Length: 245
Image (cartoon, rainbow, N blue to C red):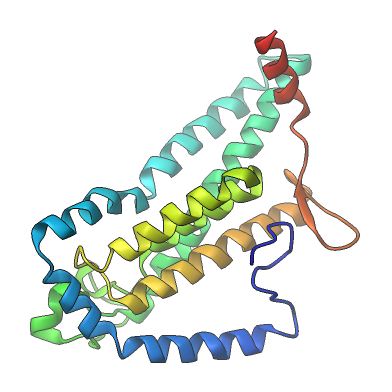
């Protein structure tokens, strides 16, 4: 389903985008009919059933990814001015890696937060007072920022960012990301439509950030056939080989 080298997932291209958007709207409309039943049912599960979801759900927070990657980006960028030769090249590669991780996860997160405020959907915590389809557009607080799910977007975006850089780890991170996304329903923070939209935003947002990097030749290279691959990290590989000797 996912050839991570392609510019967009799911066979998306210039011709199929309109059909995809229509399908997305239809899918959200159909899924919305399950929102109340799925949300109220999952919240009503016994505490021991819900406990694992509370344990894993915070993996979807972005801080644990964004803060270390930003610190590493700044440190490796500044180190370039104190290093020479292979080590300077390695610090440049490390700065580019950390920049992509920061932007690849942070970009979809920013898009999600903007959509949350614009849409202004009430969270399940407000169900008794406002129902499942109450909205306070633009001017709202966290209680009316349910759609789309930010945790879902972050977890799935991270899976694709890792996949673009180290494809062999992609399946494990994708499974983990989907589990985190699903967890948002039983912990009572989102409806299924919020989760589904978050997954889509996280996936497409990660592709968009990767494509922007490739357009400028940063870390990625777009081949003549349109496929996008990560450039080899020559200096970091050489340093790793020396350390293993």
